[in-house]
Image 1 (cartoon, rainbow, N blue to C red):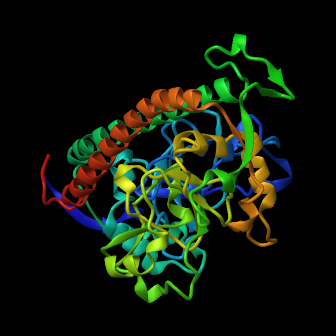
Image 2 (tube, rainbow, N blue to C red):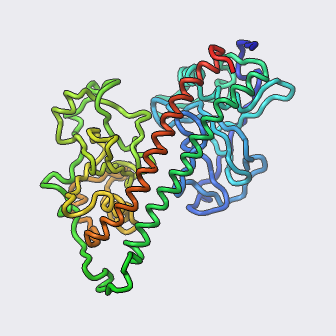
Image 3 (cartoon, one colour):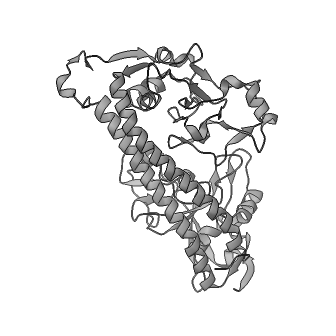
Length: 418
């Protein structure tokens, strides 16, 4: 295998995106305006579902992307820049728009280069380090096509590039397939909840009367009544209790709003504190069945604490809700908090002009529709089985990602041949 040390600019060109006009942004529309948020931290395309920006205006020629186009992130809103310089590949034709803050990567004519190889190269630690080191801005980090093109890298012959890209892409394809399966399973749980507890088409509904809009035998109770004790709803510790100097590389994971992704806890960039500190602030340590709820920014992010997260710590920007299992099943409450009516009520309790903020007190008047215990149990039995499948797939994806991340630097610098 023959390698040369060179710059990225010897092989590719990078084109700036277009500044699409905000007046044409909508919740619905034919086109999706891509943002840096469409890139996973470790690279790869990330669909944002209902949070995608849609565009209804005229699209300039050359900015409607095709399947297989390669984009690189040139702006990161996070100070540590976890996604800056990262890349992703467009999954479909004629849907996604090449927005500003993203660069379109094309191979130069006549060069011996494989686009798949460069996709993986843009997600290596060495390259990302060069990008962060040359980036401008303190809070919002910026790079540019010229800075990216100037990065020094090692590149093998074309045949080796293709073999490396094929080996790494096999992992990515398995991970992406798991992501799609997880999304379908999560949707199945939501549809089941909606069918039983929103449309009231639960087993045996034909024989139950609807009284004042609620099935007979059901009740509406306030959230605090369904939680354990006086501290059933509790915010994370104040800044005076947990300082920046308390965080360590190892220890108890501290869940912040940024870690609540897809209604699960992502540990990719999670902060940690020593076990001694977690024990000192023990009231914020979470248990199986607790619900951790983001109370800052994007209100509605939440996760149900399962066995893998038992003992995680509720961070400053979150709320911990501890259901009383004798009054309501935790998974049922978790799904109820995501129903349109309940989620809308909670969002309206948030306050703040710059950033929305939710207090524990703001949740004291949240009404919860309580189905009979046997229906909650039947729902949890069905939905719990689906969630177990989700946990297995998520664990498999984590293992695949770790294996890929171990291989990536070794393949990309020639230490390991394929």
